[in-house]
Image (cartoon, rainbow over all chains, first blue to last red; front, side, top):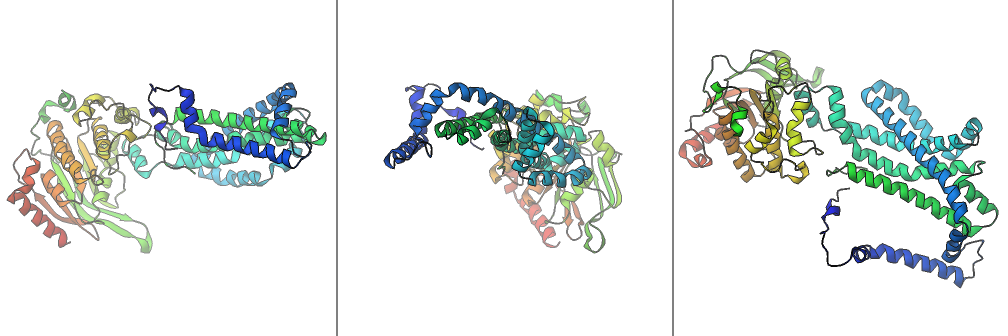
Length: 270
Length: 272
């Protein structure tokens, strides 16, 4: 988080940018290529049947053959994850603001938030499906639930992470609580908020997929179940990779937003 | 020039007025206690002192003598249990509301997401303050930071950050500047430089300055008067007038006069 050297690459380099990227990223690229080769080698070397474990080549084939299916099932999961991410974090942030302004509210509702968080998401899913039916609603709610708690805890910490000296300064300046909130607390909380949003950006995809396992007919989760039951292992793997790509996409969006909003060096946030 | 923007009125033009009829700050019989019952600690006991308008007074004392507590009580950051504090004839609370004083902390306490000039502007954006204010850009020039207006605090050294904090304190054109060990965390070379510059700013603005330090040379070099406190409980030991030729330069610290003053102050502190 403290790395600010990102923008310091000289604008005029004698080599094309592509080679710079290769030069900078070769260790992870080499590791990925090596692991894929190892995987393919094991599958071929031990003659593993495709339905038990397909090799990378089979999975690539599944991507090509099922591109349409993957695409049409990508969008529902994407929408559920995004909307769940939005509403889960929104409620968490608003509740954190309430908690910071009222100890009573915090004492009343925080134990309930902890309790809700302790229920395994896989156990909540059937309950919500029974209540809200088979549409988008239960999936969005489950994705929201899984985002909610880490953001709540981090946001409360972030809003309180103002040094006593800064609060003394604001008092000397006769600043109102609203002014302290908007001028100091909101910005102080951003590093904490983004730490939570990064977690939420990947868990909301998990929430959406788990929700789709419970009697859903669309989405990547439903496709995973269907591919498993029909022994279409290459399609199963392709679906899993698609889900992972979705999570990486959301994570990257959060990281880009963080870099835009937080330009100052931040203290270590856990 | 920046200085013109700083002066509250023409009567305060340099050199700083030596005396005025009513003191800027009157501390009379002040007690401050922390805690309740058996854990009760007396931080200040029966402290009386008058700070003349336009003067530069340093507060010196061993750690735990309550020198910061006294400053914070004047700034309405710590409640007093007995006695009274008058700031230009008003309670510390009213003086704070009216922006009669500014406070400079040991840490610069800059908001890290704001540029230097936006940090200087902060007092004008909160607490309903900002009618008769100085120009933030002029103030940054006054503290020697011309050209660094848009730098973030991370991009500035510790000394520069403290300069921004001083500019921020001056933006409301306060009559009084309360400084709580503002250079305590800086290296000696930076500290010497800022000491000399602070004297220049004091002469140019005519502000009353109350400056807490635990450095004997700093107290003697800066103060027209040095208020020495004794510890456990914090109480006034001495209010010494420092007669050194004005304007003071750093070299004055090598003169016999200066060394005699610091020797005297050291003796006072050791007796505490």
